[in-house]
Amino acid sequence: MLALTILGNNSALSFKNRHQTAQILTTNDQLFLIDCGESTQIQMQRYQIKKNRINHIFISHLHGDHYFGLPGLLNSYGLTNRIEPLHLYGPPQLIEIIELMQKVSDSTFGYELIFHPLRKAEAILDLPALTVSCFPVSHRIPCWGFSFQEKRKPRKIDIEKVDYYRISKNSLTAIKNGEDVLNELGELILNEKITTEGMPPTSYAYCADTLYDESIIPFIEGVDLLYHETTYLDEEREKAAQRFHSTGIQAATIATKANAKKLLIGHFSSKYENLDLFEIEAKTIFKNTSVTVEGTTYLIDKPLR
Ligand SMILES: [Zn+2]
Ligand SMILES: [Zn+2]
Image (cartoon, rainbow, N blue to C red; front, side, top):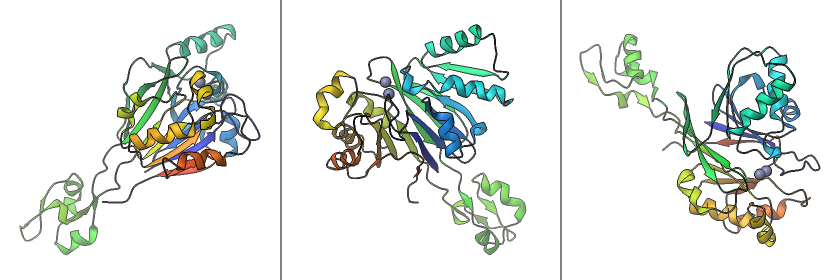
């Protein structure tokens, strides 16, 4: 099961306790940081995020509200004697910025920073538990969305059934590997009789800053949780288009057309003090919509089939 914690849900400026974009996606054993607005470290402390469990950071684009927190975070890892290598994914120029900062300050981080430039839609990370892919979105400068797809988990051993069918415990590894096994009477017992299905794999897609753009749909089709920006309400549709952003109606339309299961919206313009209208507007198109709330963790799951 995946879980998403929102650290920042505002657009370019922080406003009334809303901060620039940053999110933490949690799997069983590690955390992934998605974008790193300038308040990210403070928000991590506020919401007790264990930053040393982050080994992969994904930066969507080089507008400041999505990465101005990164230099500070990379520096903090060095100051706290990080040893683990850190993988960073982002537009190619990002590493130039970081290297220039290191050069002019005559300093290094003290741990290995492995940079992965984003150049085309493709899988960028393959772990035992999940794969991560990037896809281009339509913004004023090159910008990338990210999709996280869990892999199917192995079936679980039902130990009561193992005893019932009089199977030796020496066969547990074989059962775990999906094999049919012989019991003490020499009978072949099918694997599906002594195991239950594992938790179904889930998926998350982050669409970064983008215009309304149906070309992203193939990359997010059927996703369990979709995050789509809604910088403006639909009454500002023209301004949204001029600034390469989206409205609540547009995000909800993408969610509907992509057959997403749930929609989270964020990246709100600071001109809006009350966000209720965003949810009301989006729900007219896509009912299962929530306005993101900073500090809230959204579980991404689906019922067992
Ligand atoms: Zn932005
Ligand atoms: Zn932007």
